[in-house]
Length: 384
Ligand SMILES: C[S@@+](CC[C@H](N)C(=O)[O-])C[C@H]1O[C@@H](n2cnc3c(N)ncnc32)[C@H](O)[C@@H]1O
Image (cartoon, rainbow, N blue to C red; front, side, top):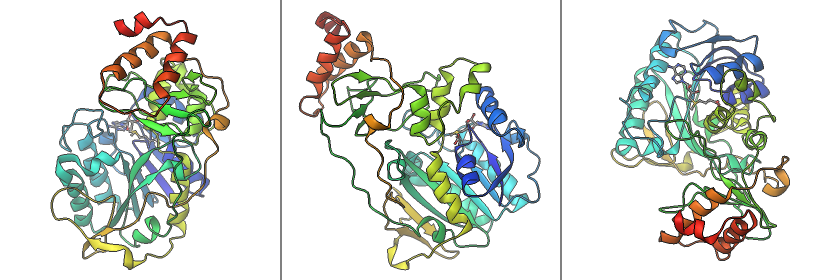
């Protein structure tokens, strides 16, 4: 099917869809470094700028994808609701869809979307879809189950005017056991920028790669390797952790700072997730109505739900449509990452020292050993 990719970023959805046989015919993206990547990687596709300036979609488009900006929605950002300028951009998707009436609409966002304004933001999105005559289904899925050692939950919403989106999103269910903490045996990813109120932590994986703060400062996680080294992953491995080939975003360096690539990678849809979805759009499976539950009229929303044209339902299904066990993180990584600096390590230890958190036994000792190995004095820790 022909695809219009709105808010295309570096094309995670469109690359995965291409692997499933679909063809992007139009992309819309405003950010210069992302545009540089798209023009290099998909040179034949019509690349437009601001979605608001798109008058219409090409008539033969059957799938519209939109991973609309999540800065306003994500926990990291300031919560300003759907009316916030940027997240209000999802309204542009409905404007274009009202006219073009595409067969499928695919939205993607952070799971916090489901909690925003007590669930009302998401309720307004599905209200709009229903007004346009679409049935819909959403599901939180985790990249880890798709064979990549990254914990990354995202909500995917599929809507259709002609088919049952439940048969796309809920036809597959597997259950992949997540690795347990095992210091010294496998690698553990963690956010060294955190450690006071919480700690993004992933045994044998990295926690969700992020797009940085609202001012665009990239914050890659650190990795405690089985041999005790603490490194920051190489950007090329971060690209691979999202399912892209290494150096997928290199072209961004022609137009901006190299560090901008981290934000691009952190915002993207993981390619194998998109590929699975793309395949199911071609060949929907079957929906088991036994999974149906009651949909909450108010308050917190479920991780999976659907609208069958008449009634909204909660769907009792997990985050793993497939169960492709990833390689061990330390074996997956291909490039030698730089050690976490003494300053960063000391800062992290300083935060953990005053935190009321419980860390895995041996973790803090391992980080202290790393600090000593990179020449950090305990005094640095105190000063941090
Ligand atoms: C969450 S990212 C999407 C990532 C994308 N799905 C991928 O796999 O790379 C949202 C993107 O929307 C872009 N964006 C923000 N406002 C836009 C607008 N008005 N028109 C087009 N793109 C916009 C941002 O620059 C950002 O790249």
